[in-house]
Image 1 (cartoon, rainbow, N blue to C red):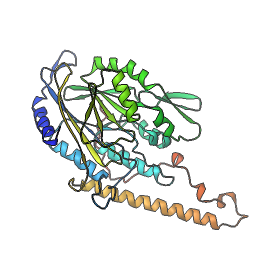
Image 2: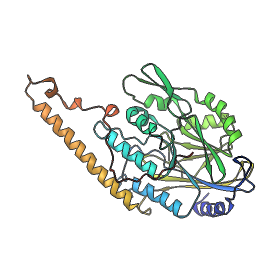
Image 3: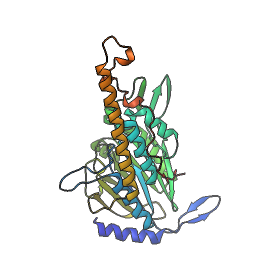
Image 4: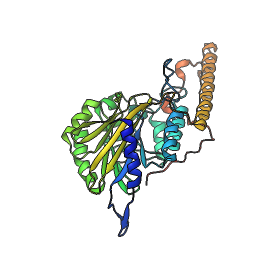
Length: 364
């Protein structure tokens, strides 16, 4: 469906959100309800536009502007981060990833699905997860460290968006698991996605109006799962997604692929009847190009962070040069080399600019 169609559906959705509450906290919708699902594909840790000469796209400041506009219009939305947002850099990876996480908080991300980059940067990602400011959903992945095994995230989370119950779960496939390069002593295991979905989806279906899959699986594997497991209303693709101009269907499931490097915004508007059936939808995945104005506050925070990255890189280069010039008979500490720079997975925590005001909701 085209963008005007999506806009019409959103206007209609705004008039349909009138949930009724009865009993001890039990919600009973008597009318149709509307919702927009927002995602940005995988950003690969990029803070600014791609720098393309013809039409630079992406960047956190434009991403924030999209969310600003939805809030200004009072559009009911659920912003989901599909994974692979971490920055993999031996010097600045920890610092930049923590900044990106703060921007996820600021732009009201409701839930995060970890991808290979987050598993590779496990020390940093685990710390961010444990702050519990954004729910981490990972339905089929466990981590083992020092002989102890635990889930990487929650199996699922149910969000109440103005009376509409939206169940969100996440699956990571073998390709994504193979792409991860975790620190020494950390082992990730992924249960079979098909078996996990077959057991979990019926439970979600009984509790929610809409069931959403955040997929860290290859697109072809996701399509096969959707064809085999009924009951998933929407699938959002996060592992090296292609760019498609609008959502498509696999059976009864709406599927959205919004591209890589955070260069596009995916907007999928749903109209849901009281029985939980999607009776209409509209979508369009549009580029974050020059037609999208930047959020000025976020743009300044990005500049501040870039300066912090430059400072870290300069300090690391100076340290490497000093170590290389040290006498061969010097102390072990002085006999380092560029290869001795602390790996990103074990990098010390570096605070992003302190002026950030997260403003996130925890989805509870």
